[in-house]
Image 1 (cartoon, rainbow, N blue to C red):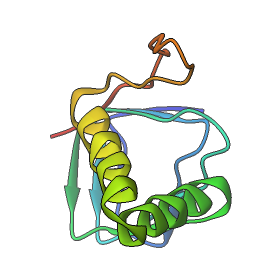
Image 2 (cartoon, rainbow, N blue to C red):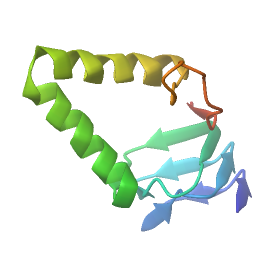
Image 3 (cartoon, rainbow, N blue to C red):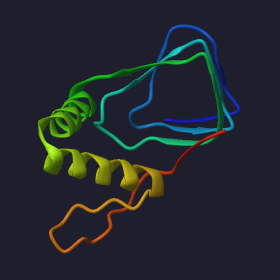
Length: 106
């Protein structure tokens, strides 16, 4: 689904599978399950709460577990955070970058 210039002010907004262009999210819950790409471009986020479910929540739990396990696990988790910052994700042993959804909240 595609939203352009929409304003969301109440309830929950499911992000999976949607594109949001120049939208405003005010005091809503943003829900991400990790089952489909999401695109947020030039959106404003004010007073939002995040909820992660399904595969997205499992991924966060794995990263948390790695970070807390030992120095090696912490290093892996920190590397993933750097990949998040740069948007350069690797998913194969030979470090081939994968295409990522553009998420730019303004």
